Image (cartoon, rainbow, N blue to C red; front, side, top):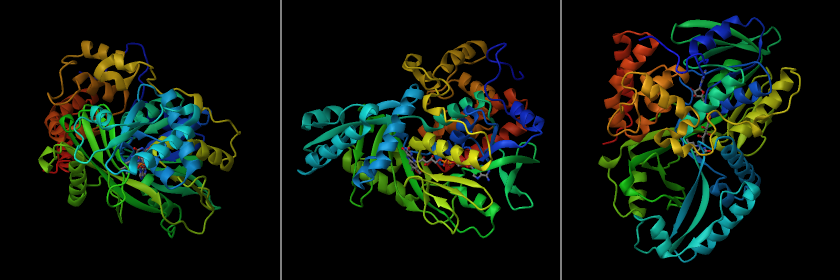
Length: 533
Ligand SMILES: Cc1cc2nc3c(=O)[nH]c(=O)nc-3n(C[C@H](O)[C@H](O)[C@H](O)COP(=O)(O)OP(=O)(O)OC[C@H]3O[C@@H](n4cnc5c(N)ncnc54)[C@H](O)[C@@H]3O)c2cc1C
């Protein structure tokens, strides 16, 4: 069966062939070209397209392959920054949290977090701190914090370690699915007119005679075809790979990014069956630890390990897994062991460590925006929660550099693809928001559409076809790691599901069995790194 349209007569939402055709049709330079398809880059593409600028984005692997699919999945003001006294940063993040919940209600949910107290001073200390957090949120508040007695704490956290427990403090923050939000941001950008291409690394920058950046050299990995793309302004949004693009601009650019690895392990819900998350603000070595209910499992993390050279597929270190397990055991009744880890994944924080002698404008302590002498705009640091503000600041700068007609940012009130205030009615398809109905329709229309991918996974085959037809999934990994979250939820189940996903991909994309086998093999090799036992 060849590709068909899910909704007869309706245009496909994101289609790679259409994107390539639009790229090739263009004779004028693009207003803005974005390098990097994580939250920062896709946010910039969306902001620019929504202002009516012509924008193209290139992602070397898949949208969200980098840090943007490997976070703790929290939309938060950052209780940690409050402890550091960084009030403006917390207020900005709390405001962005509120804006994101309003614009993507199908993906951002309020979640109660309980700080369990074992020492006498913890209740007043965290109680007062969290009241300040509530106050800073103002009209963007998610619900007031409260002190909890022993019984109330145990009611919310049924498997919390009771030995020495005095009570707790509950506060409210946001939770989301990071890769799903990214795909919906990309779809929103596409609907606003942006061209976005995955599996297309930028390999070089094009400079004019005066040394100004005037475009990028990009390769389509599916055909191995290079393209020269001209642009009035180029934005570098490559996260921990920021310095590699800065070196394309200037070979001797000094390093700006100090990557720091954070890992999470995923456990069965029996370890923490409550509806609230556990937040430990200060482990013995001063880190923050979360245990968060997510898609029917529990996500526990994270760590902070300096890394010299960034890798696109970082692996959790043995000692990081042991650290998280040790601390989980301290706060949970049943001690999880290595055999209980369903999946372990690592992400790299793009921390800004050092600049060079160029004009560095730190718009806040959280994100850094730099304009090089050649006009290359680099945006980095920050977090998922503040991506919209980062994009606004970036496009403001890029538009001036490119001498574009000044236009106001509109994303503050722009709904994100799929927005639906009550998408919980769609059950396991709720993260798709308004697309859920189309996927339900597809499940009836295609053979085996409603068959589960694997007994241990909450996904059906129609979701795979949807991901390929409408969301530009091109490989087994794209489907199992980011369009669905199978790899993160249960790596063994994802490996079991891979051959069937390969068959569906080959069917939808018109590829042969050998291609499918190659994509499955690549995925199996990658997924083995998510198994720790
Ligand atoms: C462990 C951990 C937990 C976190 N938890 C949270 C959280 O709960 N809440 C929160 O708000 N934030 C959180 N963050 C921070 C947040 O995830 C990151 O700040 C954010 O995802 C960074 O996005 P980015 O787009 O800048 O980078 P990335 O997502 O890494 O995107 C950069 C992209 O550029 C691409 N690229 C690189 N080179 C090229 C090239 N030459 N050509 C084309 N493309 C290229 C890469 O493939 C990559 O996809 C967490 C971070 C970590 C590490």
